[in-house]
Amino acid sequence: DFSEEDIVFASREELIRKLDGILEEIQKLISGFELGRIYREGIRIVLIGKPNVGKSSLMNCLLEKERVLVTEIPGTTRDTVEDVLDISGVMAILTDTAGIRNTEDPIEKESVKRAQQALDRADLVLFVLDTSSALSKEDIDLIEMVKEKQKKVIFIFNKMDLPAQWEVSSLNLLENATIFRISALKKEGISELLNALRREVHFGAFQKDEVLLTNVRHKNALESAMMKITQARDTLKGGLSQEFVAVDLRGAMDDLAEITGEIVTEDILEHIFSHFCIGK
Image 1 (cartoon, rainbow, N blue to C red):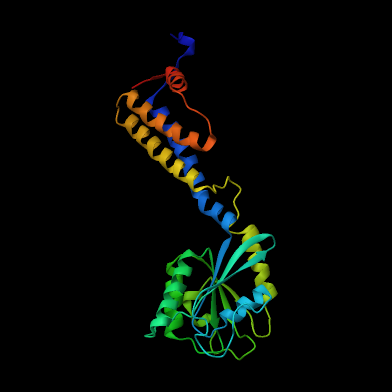
Image 2 (cartoon, rainbow, N blue to C red):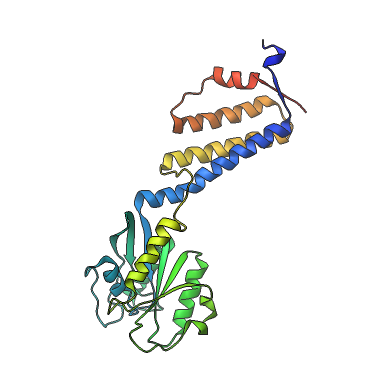
């Protein structure tokens, strides 16, 4: 038996607040999993645009090598092409995609499908537009589709060495967008774009001061613990017995032990609850 000095009286409300605080911290860790994946596997940067806007030329410029075949024939790239780009010490997986457009060609349809899949996986999108050609409905539809994905997007106005057929002011969809003007053919504007990528990687959305989760098993354990702690909190809110709370918290502690490597015994759990006298 414990003396009165050993007992900590806590109301249900106080315990609920404590559990809410724990749930908030676990949620932060789970939220850091995707960013941890980026640091483990690399940032996925995907080049998107219509056929023949200069995506492949831009990829070759960024990689500083002839990685992708470039011709004047629209649709030369029929599949996604990947290569590794080192952005000041941070690995990026740069992906060139087939031009996205409506087509009846079965092979090109498959290429467009793969391009859209690459877009879905992207952490950062480089959307390439050809300002030397008139803006088309296909351009607008593609911009709208990409914006709906709610990805981080940098718009690349390519072929700045040629007379522009339209300006950004003519398109409300690009209001407040991040835009760079380049000529992939003459390699103009590439260094400025690379500097922007460095800033984005090192100081932008891909930076976080909190702990990053990189292990899938740890993420699953946290999600399981979160579910059980939520059940424990709801049990407290429902006014049920602390024995039911203990069962859920024991399960959550077992989940967390998979991450920490610690063994949670019945004695430890009993000791924790022996110090609480849950009030009404």
